[in-house]
Image 1 (spheres, one colour):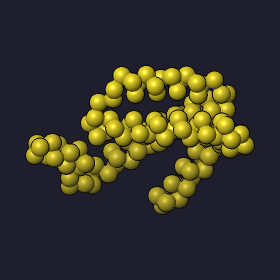
Image 2 (tube, rainbow, N blue to C red):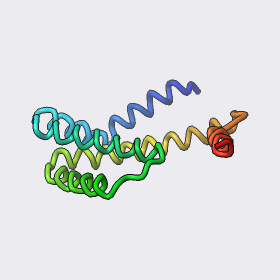
Image 3 (spheres, rainbow, N blue to C red):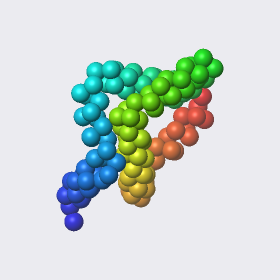
Length: 125
């Protein structure tokens, strides 16, 4: 069994998955509507910025949280953007689950896991 062949099979299966189809159709509709495209990309950029800030260990302010909540409510009013974000969320969960499955396999052959490295880094601080 060739893992590369299986990876291509998995990619094909994902492309045929309902959430992927919904994301692709919504993406196409968003790209055809400049205001929806701007709204979606602004939302995704802001979401990424806030997540990056949290990953750096920084606390989000009440204003940042409130502003993002308001932005989220506005974005939900656009059907295509809402559909895209929901489908994208499903795809992200799928990819994280697949990554976890593959990580378990890699743990069997690894001398040092990422978790061990992170644990050691935490002890040094």
